[in-house]
Image (tube, rainbow, N blue to C red; front, side):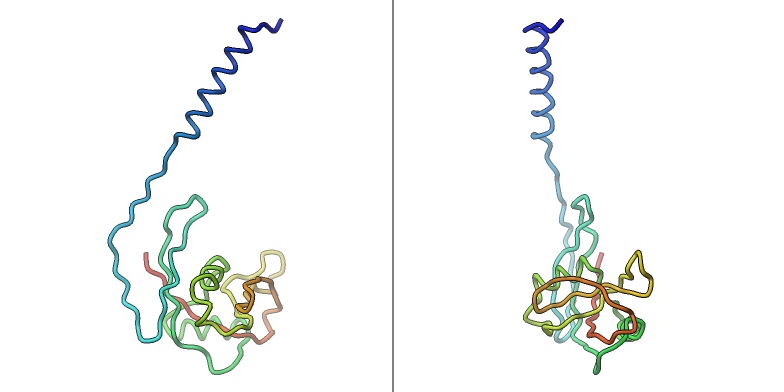
Length: 148
């Protein structure tokens, strides 16, 4: 049998749980770090993990390939300039913070499509949308450096 006392007790338990969840705080510690930017490079920002912790800092490198490249060639080019292609998350950060320094066309990411290994993800830096295309297509590329 449900009584007023039982309902009030459950209400008090729920209020305590709500208080516990809403009073939880997260402390982020930003250790002093120094990033040396080479000529023409841009600091893109901090990349966070799914739980909001700092994974690394991202730098957009200045060098660009002379021509459009297939995905494999873009991966090789990025390594040849001591960088790597950005992840999809990093591409979103580049669009948000470095858009004036990016050509408004699509650029390869380093991520293959999980359901179709013949495709890889790209970001169109003109509008910021992401999609995927066949790895044999020729697109633009930028390289990034990461600092932990």
